[in-house]
Amino acid sequence: MKNTALLFAIIILVTMLGCQSSGDRSTPGEETKSIMDITPADAKAIAEEAYIYGFPMVMNYKTMMAYTLDKKSPEFKGDFNELGCEARVYTPDDKAIVTPNSDTPYCMGWMDISEDPIVISVPEMEPERFYHFQLV
Image 1: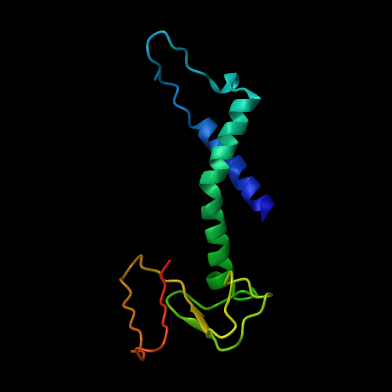
Image 2 (image 1 turned 120 degrees about the horizontal axis):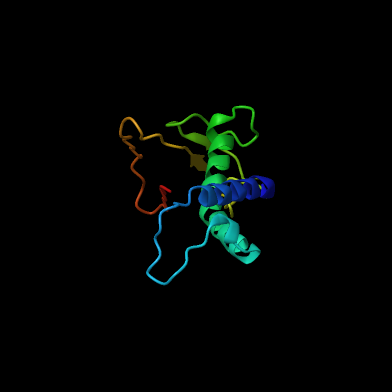
């Protein structure tokens, strides 16, 4: 996981440095830095910003890959636009739910809304029961 994030941060750093415009954006009397003038401290700061920006996207893609695309993954939950429900008690070995309840069934699904909207219907629940439906 660290290697993936580090690789992503390096790619972002190289891309950011390589895409600098050669045009002069400085105000009068201010010199612009070329890529050759970047100090190690500047490079470190750029890498940290790239890591902070890119890490959530990389981790989200890694999770999506394991849950929906890689059918051989032990974390596979099902294809896009399908709910995968597990009628069992979760244990500390389960990583999909951060702090699972021992008496709560969990369903999970990833929705692809790139082509069409998704309509979700949930069953009616008795008013005395706790019912939680979360979209992230």
